[in-house]
Length: 208
Image (cartoon, rainbow, N blue to C red; front, side, top):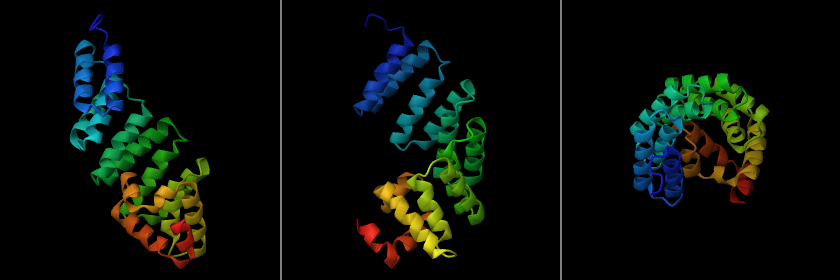
């Protein structure tokens, strides 16, 4: 009320509104910030996050693209844009964007991992394996561990079981189909993982 012309205050207000799930109000606050200064990338990235929460992927993509034009080296925003194309099953476009974010930050294991997710859906299992291995070499996270396990389950069951046990010990949520879907796992990788998790040797780890 005292200083309605400060776009930073509108941004802070929008963050508080998002934290309280007041998404419509947050978008109005961001509109106000945009009116004052349309050249702040943060505004468009914040809008994109809200649109994604409301499953408005097209609006989220357009907002991200505007933000990236202002801040072209924001590897996290480029990664998020890649994720939207991954959701839309536009795997080649997603892979290209993940590649761009990795060029900016070479140890960005999340982008390397998501390239693996995309390549598996295009039936390029060998490249998916390589990418999951690369992601693990940077950070031994549950997601690439289980992704790799699902890739190698036919040719190396013993290794697949070891990897899957390690993944589930690190993050038990990955046992859940819906949780993996939230992490943008495609139908083919999901199917392979479901088969793997039914293995007798994994039964105890899955139950735990």
